[in-house]
Length: 117
Picture 1 (cartoon, rainbow, N blue to C red):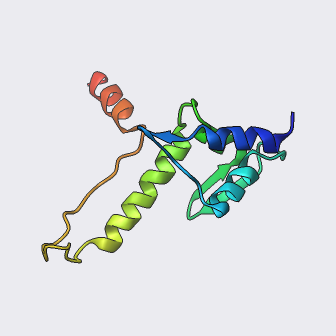
Picture 2 (spheres, rainbow, N blue to C red; picture 1 turned 135 degrees about the horizontal axis):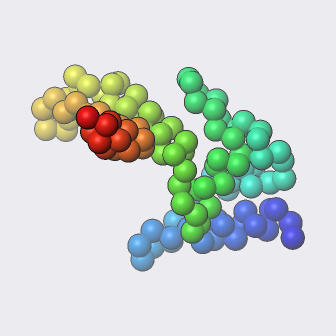
């Protein structure tokens, strides 16, 4: 079966609650590039100290569990956005509260270290 057909099926399966998520043409093309034939180990995203391969991005398919690499990459993007927004006022003119985003491994490490005491 053609990889493009698989990508199209995955795109059509995207739903948010009662509404269907309709990707833009650019998003559709990006989705096809991720799911087209290519080496699973090919790095598709390089950003700071993160490298995300085609295989790691396959966790974005409908009905698939997210992997730690995808989660931690997104947390890093959120942390970066928080740092950029810090000090800027919100719509009500109040400062935006500071946030911190933990790695997906944080709780495991916390509980493991606690048991070692």
